[in-house]
Image (cartoon, rainbow, N blue to C red):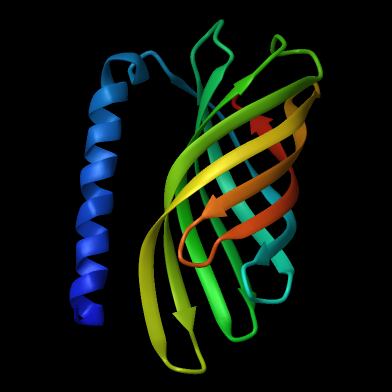
Length: 168
């Protein structure tokens, strides 16, 4: 299959997956409100490449009284002439109530827009995310430390820290 055709096939599959996910969540998602936004910074270890700094931004949506959070985000890293811009949609669950230190677990799906500069080649593929971490509450924010595994054409393990500033 031609690389260009493969890329559009991956985009079509991803679009279909996102539509199905949104349809499945639509009844419940209407009850989720914007809760805040923030960023994260850490190290990524992409498969067969050197470790590299990774950074990202995210928004957070929650339902009052629920421990389930919806978190769209965008991550970025670059190493060895390869870069990945990675928009994701993750869902996570924290085990203790909102104003307490709490572990969390989650997962999601994302797109990996990979650019290989040395061979002038772009690739887009779907990635699956597994996330686990610890949340630490603050007055108008919470900080977190998390481990993240992304299964994709260039799978990666990341260790990140970040902050989410709560909406007023």
